[in-house]
View (tube, rainbow, N blue to C red):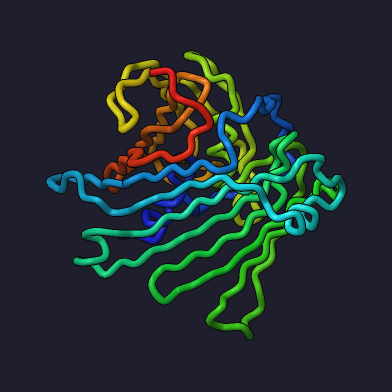
Amino acid sequence: MHYRTRLSLSALLLCALAFASVPARSLPQPEVKPAAAPFEPTEELVYDGEFTRSLLRGINVAELRFTVTRAPAAAASAAAQDNKPSTPALRFTLEAFTKGILRKLFGLNFHQRIESTVEPASFSVLQTNKIDEQGKRQRISEAVFDRQAGKVVWTERDPNDPNRPPRVVTNQLSGAVQDIASAFYFLRTQPLALGQSFEMLVSDSGQIYRTPVRVTERKKMSTTLGQVWTLRVEPEIFGEGHLLRGKGKMSIWFTDDARRVPVKAQINNELGRLDIKLKSARKLSAPLAL
């Protein structure tokens, strides 16, 4: 499987990680505002990823795990720089790893962990820490979002080669920006409604991308939470100037209630289809209105 395809597993509900550059200075500040958080800093969501291509059907290839916690005070203060948050910063953790046939038959061993520290009032990311392991290849990166200086600085290191100079990317920063993990939660704070459309800024590897989002369908769906009404949300992540080069489409189904729990996601491209389904949910902030 191609490197960028494996990366897309960790994108889960909002992106994979190979990019076409969009200059940050050309991006307007989004008008969308975060609402009250529909989740508690104890929530954990676990997903299975199944890949389908041609005659291959429903092959379990990955597990993805999302957790919400409060960031340690020292880490949050160091990331905030200009304004120390009046309430503790949130930390969103996304972890993805290969499993099943990919590991047994093809020897593919992929693990990625993203930790996103977010200022809760503006819901803007302060810092992103990432561990990327693909077989023997390892990369550790950090992005610091300095809103006072108006810039994001991304640094990547190879822990297997400490003498190798780090890669550094700096870009201009304006307004509230999300990363791969926080964008997933930011969507949950939005008052989603059928026919709605908006944009958000998503950053990865020091680049910043304008990401249009549309709400295209409302339907009832059988899930691990039972029969629930859902809203289909389509973030535009494929194509020139977006998070992923090439042709493709992503859809995410959120419960149409106050919790906005993502129960399913689907990524389609020329390589096949990746279905990501909620397997378990722990410590939701309140009972779902089923």
